[in-house]
Image 1: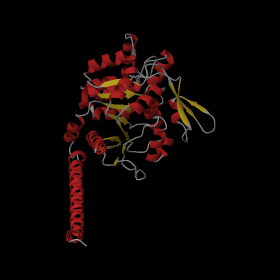
Image 2: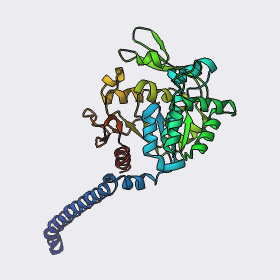
Image 3: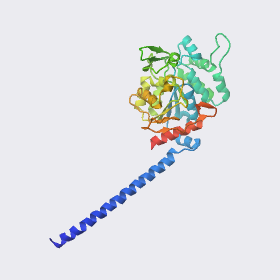
Image 4: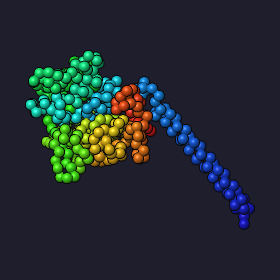
Length: 350
């Protein structure tokens, strides 16, 4: 064997060993660096100890859209109202009970009650909120009516569109966030049961003893155009909290909204109730409620959940640090909810 070849045979194994060791050290270093970077990102973006930190983080978003109704959506909007025009609430308009039901029966209008509730929680002055929520207790024509519902109906009679009346009242109340009806056309919620029965209206659906097979709107209506625009430009879409069948679900039954959510690039967060509601939906697990929601999202998936207890959910982040307001176990503490939303979004961002 030539002398040069013998030297190569001796040297090559050492070179291979050296390169192997270098590769191992480099791999370990990269893995360690990657772990350090991830730990640093996690530390900086997912741990919020104060509402001001969460506030500062969420202000970076260009648009947040929240869908729902009732007290739940109002509480959520109150927690995020610092977002000003970058926060949009799309409100269910299918309620047919109480003052809203009386107005709808008499005038074939959209349901104003949940919109009034949201505006009252966003109002800058407590007296304004009390005025909107004032309910007449006497008089054959006024008894049972909410002043805010009557005011919105009156403004609507003077306006070209329902959203014009909402914007006018928002300006009077100095509300800087956008509140939109899911549709400007009157419609009702309908549940189809497994017994082949059609349950018409929220009042009857609230009285169901078990989950329906499906939900729909009658008639099927178009979404408010501005609502679609905001969904498509949102970075974050929030569903809930609130009554599952009669507050959270109605906006998701409009095909325009389903399609817009599916086309949006936004992350989707579902906020569960703190206390199980007194309805068939309250007896579902959080995962079962997610499955119900996703049936109406045209392929879009919920990316994170805020829930005090959802051990069955392991495929997406669950933020369980949210707390109740003092002395009100079913009502989210505003600061705690704000921190939980920032926590959920930052984990998705990572």
